[in-house]
Length: 318
Ligand code: A2P
Image 1 (cartoon, rainbow, N blue to C red):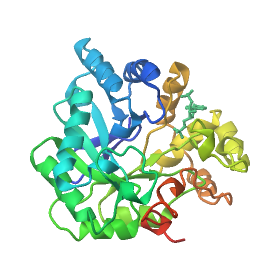
Image 2: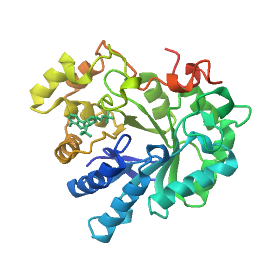
Image 3: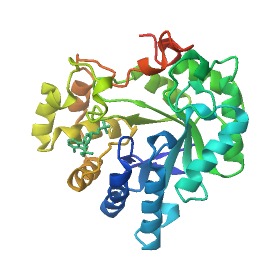
């Protein structure tokens, strides 16, 4: 499996298993199937409410000799209610203990949005902190502290746009090493990709398959479907693969890590093999020119009248 390289020479397998939306009753088996299939990169987060089960599966895989800790790449993410400097380590240690690990490979600030301690999903302004209450610099200094203690090998963020990344880069000291954002042929993030590349920040694509299993309340009726797009279907038929393989290869061929979620053994295996699919330049160019553009995870749940944040705190303006 191809890897991407951090500034210090450490490597991250370009394909990982996504665990958002994997239920506690399913994720244990999914992680074991994935490791058996050859996955060495598992993407987790505190808010997925399943890190205990992921941890039990990692422990089982290591105890059974399926894999060694040093060959695994485990990512976790700091939830929005732990952004104060004194809370960063608390949030981190809970994930570390749930995952039954003594370090993670990568730890990310999940969103540039801050909640009061103990809030899972803020529903009104009173449940949020603003940037003046908790500046991003505070959270980032907490992240730098975790890295300097060796608790995480690498630090970064998720859902950060260029202006938020610039803010963090200006802090000094250890800089961001990864930005994980939604990415697929309907959301190519070209400016952000260019910015990250020129600042030595690796990227990971989340929801590469369009996140079809997210809650119906967050879906719009007229959403375009990646699995029905003609260009994606024609490239899939050219390589005699399923459309998911093209969607996975779209990221790996751009040197962007990708974390398709599955709890189905057949699809877990299929997706793993898709990590090796090499697309002709002409096919990649066609994917980069698809007219349908769409953001599935639109961020409106953290913005609007009930929140101090706006969509411009999240996404590029164009
Ligand atoms: P399942 O878990 O039953 O396999 P995303 O990674 O964009 O969030 O997408 C996850 C969704 O895509 C889940 O519904 C998952 O279902 C489904 N999925 C995962 N792999 C494939 C595949 N190879 N073909 C079709 N659907 C897939």
